[in-house]
Length: 420
Ligand code: ADP
Ligand code: MG
Image (cartoon, rainbow, N blue to C red):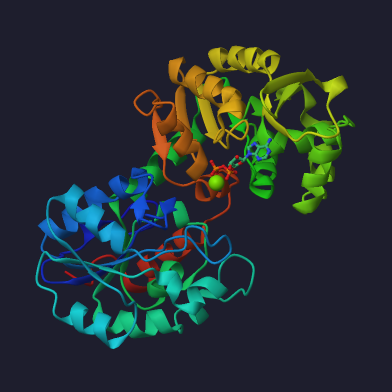
């Protein structure tokens, strides 16, 4: 038991059927089924190996994409193939989640075998309960189809999906109501590293917040500045556009329209509030870039109306690099610009490389942020790569994550040794 949650050390696994929820969601090429970023798959290997070595019958539950964005919504069949290669042992797959075929295969598993079920978001409830659509209590989640059909076949539920720990969905919080439950090794490690750094960060502690997840970014910024965890905050991406608007700076028609179109204008007020209290701790861009046939950098008093701003400029990069050099602890979530395109990757690349070169303890999280880590080949120079983006951010806001809460509930309800 650690943090009030059972771990794999607490249970005897031999011959036990274990439902293990992982987060191996990633960008995928839907034409060829090629997985484009193996970071998360690699992250859950220790847990899977351990379950198999300790002779559990492992049933893997995972999602891939969702019908909100659709472009990564796909079967998990390719994941089974990649897992088999990485594990050097066969990972079985069934294109079914709760139906009779899946249940039959689960019942027939032998000790040490691993079976990956199809995308759990193919079962409607996992999607309709995504984020804000419907809010069910964990008890209600335990009455959903997937939990009702699969829990009776299992002895133990293991959650290794730290990256999804901020989500309240049946496969994440429902099983804990009915089964003894544990966190997997990756979950345990991420939980431990992040709470350790948060508790006692070496000073100065710098937060680098960019990207497009505005609500999370501002919630986190407010918390870490208010409770004094952050000594300084650097902002890029759309986060910085909203901060600039809050300062009364005209970011041009196109970029302002984008903020409106994304329904983000309400955050200008939130940003103002943060700036009023903490302006001296927050670094904003002093120049920005747009890209048409080539890259153009412009100072704040000269931002164009007819071009989208897609990156921070060179003067800003120098200021940010200087802050990075001085920091002893660095948290990063969200790129500085549209780093996917060559003409707007300069800011993200420079900042990521500066973090890699610094001697600070650095933690980076978020799907796109990790993609950038791999793109700029700094994976060995960042101290800790957290598979979670949203989860890391919510964790840093001080919120008890729904999955953590559910796992603690299971520890209280069932104890940590019932399966022995
Ligand atoms: P993470 O996945 O690391 O948590 P986010 O999902 O919040 O990060 O943000 C990443 C996305 O933000 C990327 O797709 C990137 O192109 C986009 N982005 C960054 N800067 C801008 C910008 N100036 N304008 C539009 N999109 C941006
Ligand atoms: Mg993202």
